[in-house]
Length: 132
Image (cartoon, rainbow, N blue to C red):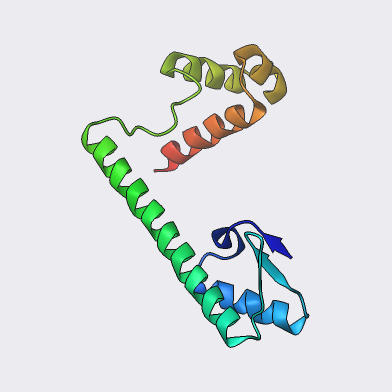
């Protein structure tokens, strides 16, 4: 088995150990970055665990930086999420076409230049706000 980076193999040290144990039971050699690691050898097991710890640390750093960046963007008012496909006027028009019953959902999607999913999502959004 060839793995380019350990963080692609497992998300935590426990995950990495479980995978290494399974590979050992199946007599599979593990190649990380071109080096072969033998999980049955004490030094191979040590190196595998160290690499797992470093990969988990790297993953945690990325998550922390992402959260920090999102908090800064939110504080500056730049974090808005995905923008809606339709304006309020287009949304009302779409729902009017749905209520009119003259067109199918697919035809409405084609008329509005959106996907069928957007049409169904707008209908569900209206139903949720009506029941709330």
